[in-house]
Amino acid sequence: MKSSCAIENEAILARLKIIHEESKGRYGAPKIHHILTQEGFTASLNRVQRIMKEAGIRSTIVKKYRPTSSSAQVEERENLLEQDFETTTINEKWVADITYIHTLRDGWCYLASVLDLHTKKIVGYSFSKSMTTPLVLGALANAIDVQQPDEGLILHTDLGSQYTSEDFEVALKEAKIQQSFSRKGCPYDNACVESFHATLKKEEVYQTSYIDFETVRLALFNYIESWYNRRRIHVAIHYLTPQQLEDFCRKEVA
Image (cartoon, rainbow, N blue to C red; front, side):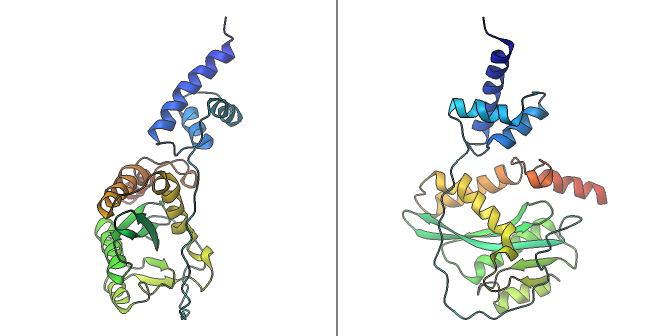
């Protein structure tokens, strides 16, 4: 006859398998433990970790791609953010960056993302076969169209040529957005959006080989819109999803 502890472990295992599958293997023990607790299970984190280990269940493994850095001279520009990532509501501080994604047929393709520091939501993005200024302009236009920010918003980026271009500067001025730049050689200045791209690579990109540009474009849409913004819980925002926190903020000011 099974003990009560063994019966509980079986129930926990059955539920955590479902949670793990629904996250496509992306959730590890801490997030699974949080969801189990919300659902009324009383298991400790250590117990959940032990059950997962015994069942051979784990989160996806990180692989890293580090592109070669440019040797071009970079002019220092004003850093308004100064690693102050604190916010009080949405659309106060955005951060933006570009990352690389490989395809078998079309080679390297490029994703430009804009993230709201308050909600961790990807408020705008653009995907292209070339890493040019129109790529970042597309992500910016997408963010502005979706969020409709008030005047005074700060957008922080690195010193890449796309973000220091005259066209990008003009677009920000027209939207009354203040531009802020990372210091040369200081990745911590833009760590939040780089963290999103690392998560994207770990949870989606490195799990498959993409045939071509269109295949990746669809995968990114599904990951960002269906999973990351609306279903993926974040420890940094008290286990809410980005969209849940944004909805709450909008209700507060309504």
